[in-house]
Length: 520
Image 1 (spheres, helix red, strand yellow):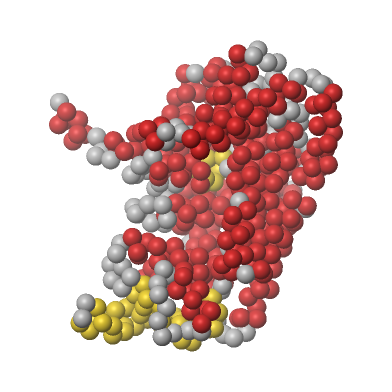
Image 2: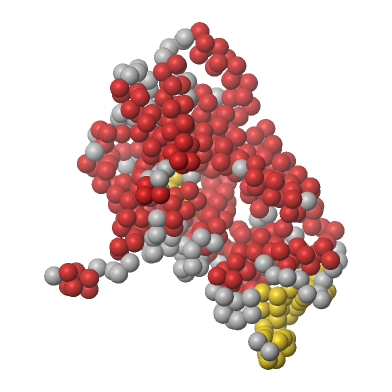
C-alpha cells in the first residue's frame, strides 16, 4: 500500500506539504492586516492570497516565490480607495494586470532588474515609514489620515486622546503592544524545534488572547460568513471609469511597482536556494494573470512577497506545490472556520504591520549602500525615501530614477559597455587549461544591465570564469549587485570567478562582488 502511494504522490511532497502549512500560517495574518491597512475589508486580502497561491503558484516563473497582497502597495491602494472609492479598484487592477501580461509577452521582464537598488529600497523604505505612521493610529482603534505627513502631525493628538481615556484606546494599545512584543520576542528566543512557527502568528494569537480573556471592547476584524459572497464582478459603471486619466495613471503605477517588487523579490529568492532560476518574463505574465483575476474577484493587488517566500524556502519547499497548497489551505480555512477570524482585533494586525513597516525601512541596507558604494548612492536612497513620504510614491520613484540617471551620465560619456567573449589560458592543478573569459570595456551601468546579465548567464556552468576589466572605466552598484548574485550561484556549484586587470578601486569593487581575489 505504501509503495503504491509513493508511486502516485510526488517524491517532493514530504517537503512541500509541511512548508505549505508554514507559509499558510505566515500568510493569514499578513493578508488580513495588509487589507485593513489598504482601507478595504479583510476578506479582500484573503481573496488575493488564495489567487496568488493557487493560480499564480501554478503559472509562476519563480516556483518557490509566494504571491499575495503586499505591504508595499498598501499605501497606494489606501489613498486610491479614499479618493476614488473601493468600486473603482477592480477595473484598475484588471488594467494593471493586462499591462503586466503585455510586458511579459514583450519580454521586458529583465529590464525591471535594471532599476537601481537604491531607488527600489528607498521606495520600500518610504512605504515602510508611511505604514508605520498610519498603523500607529490603528493601534489606538482610530482611523489613519489621508497622507503620511498628516499621520505624523496627528500623532500628538492621538497621544492626548489616549491619555485622556477617550473610548477604549487603552485596551487597543495594550493589544497592539502585546502583539509586537510577542512577535519580536518569539523570533529572538524560539527553540530550534519550533523555528518554523512564524512570529506573526504568535503575535496575532497573543494579542487576540489578551482581548478575549480581558473582555476588551476593541475593534475586531469583520469577515462574511461565506467568503464566496465577497466575490463580486465590477459593475458596468465601474468599467467606464477606466477612461479617466487618474485611473490610467493608477493602473500604470500599480503595474510598474508590482512588477518591480515581484521580480526583485524573485531575484532575492533565487539567492536562497539552488533550484531552478526565475524565468522573469513568465513570472511577469503570471503576476498579470493574478492581478486580472484579483480585479475581477474584488481582491487586492498582488506581488511576489519576500517574507512569505523566504518562509517557504526556509521551511524546505522543493517545488511550486508548496505555494499552491498554501493557497488551498487559506481557501479551506475561509470555507470552514471564518468565525475564528472575527475574534482577531484590528489593533493586533496593526501591531504586525508596524513591525513589517519598520523592516521595510531597513536602515541596515542604507548603511550597506553607504559603506559599499559611497555617499552619492546612499543619498539617492534617502531622497527617494523622503520624497515618497512627502509627496507620493510615483513622484518619489521618478525623482530617484532621475538622480540615478544623473549619477551615470558622466560615466556614459566615457563609452557604453562592450562585452567580448573568449578563452584565456590559466594554470589549474599544475596544468595549463583554457577557461571562458569575458572582456569588459567602457562603463557598466544599470542601463546596460540586461545585456551584462545575458552575457554572464551564457557562460558555461561548472567551469571557472575570468572577468577581464583592463578597459573597464566604471561599474555602478546595480551591476555590482547583479554580478554578486551571479557569482554566488556559481560558487555554490563549485565554480570559481577570477577578476583580472582594471584600476585599483574598480578592480577591488568588482572582485568583492565576484567573491574573487583580484589579480594583475
